Image 1 (cartoon, rainbow, N blue to C red):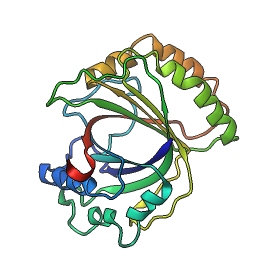
Image 2 (cartoon, rainbow, N blue to C red):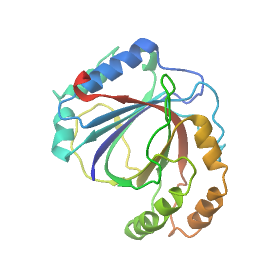
Image 3 (cartoon, helix red, strand yellow):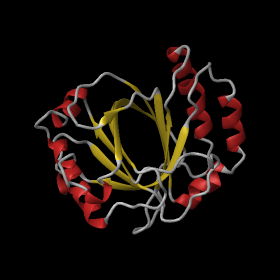
Image 4 (spheres, rainbow, N blue to C red):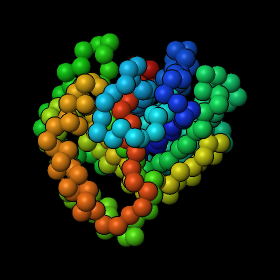
Length: 238
């Protein structure tokens, strides 16, 4: 397990894109973060990606997932004088100046897959399916136990799935000027491409997912799903 810090820049539409220069600045800033173990930068696919949950809101124009080994390592970059503040500075990302920015730190739990090796060929990018549950469960402990005990085993059956991760809440200290959210859970599936994601989500496995979903302990708020192209940033810029 480790720590994952999520940041979403949301504009509420499917048209606006982050400018190339802003994307380069984001990647450079992430690469310079001290004690970063892994950095992922997500942007929406250029064309619509068909997936099972067609009524979900528009994907964020940009999302970040930053991995750290410990909460202390994360909190060090979120201090008032921490390295992440560079991305919150005025005019740091002009193309996203009007975005609603949300943040959350969580515990990351990785689960096995049968074929972890990517077959993506550059410049093509893998596609992550970012999911979150924004509501509340009557008994969160029971809800999470059911999810962790049952859902990853079904997710593993998706053809072409390369990674499975589930994220649960924790308390964390930070001073970024962005809105904190307290989603009860997030998860991520990663595939070679948007087409591979679509094929998986329209496979018979989705029926097993929906059947297990019907067995979840009581909760409110539903869930939200975003197909996102995925760029990996090498810490230190190496």
